[in-house]
Amino acid sequence: MAGRVLAGKLGIVTGASRGIGSAIAENLASKGCNVVINYTSKSSTSLAKDLSKKLQAKYGVQAFGVQADLGTPTGPSALIAATKDHFLSSPPSPDAKFQIDILINNAGVARNDKLPDIKIEDFDATYHVNVLGPLLLIQAAIPYLPTDRSGRIVNLSSISSDCGFLGQSIYGGSKAAIEAMTRVWARELSERATVNAINPGPVEGPMYAANSDEFKAGIKGWIEHAPLMRARAGIDAEDVVVEAKTSGGRPAYAREVAGIAGMLCTPDAAWCTGQVVCANGGLLMH
Image (cartoon, rainbow, N blue to C red):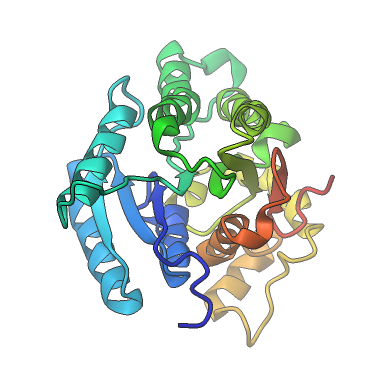
């Protein structure tokens, strides 16, 4: 089938039951990649199952969900172990080889508060999920990465690492940390995989919608000057166009961010590593 440049490969997407993670899982599947859909809580089990069925039926790939909390010390290794068990058990073969071709570190949390109100538990929870989780997941996956540089690792950062938005001491700091680790991993894993990050800005969905009115007012000027965030009547949905009149522009559609992550996973991206790639419609320009 045309466009199946990832046919036969195996990708793991963390936090993939909804939002950007779900869209990335579908993007990879559309390219022929078998996909592991990681999720944290039991409440997301049905979402992961439904997504798995959809991807299998629509794209003819293997897809299955694995519940694992990447904010715990054992969650990342449990995710890799469950993935290995699944793909080596069907069909069983004495010479079966298990390889992880693609890793998308998408799972993340955002706990915003201004400086006087920051709580230690919010710092700990954010850094365990956003920073330690990806680190432990890469550690657990290293034995199974390709040895010919064909592997792809994409970390989800955010424009918050650069822009100094109000209330994002913890979240922005965690995303700056993942960008720093991206560059280190690009060197350390250079014979195994490329390692890049993408930095979305506002993206449709509950995480962005949950931000305070003060936060949204503070980011409005940035949105107004982002060239691709202007809502367009007749192209964007009517409610998106109406909302943009207040917010300054539209957020990204999850599929748009997923497209950039998927692009970095293709063979064509083999000469790109250690980079933070724009996935924000020009809101942040370097």
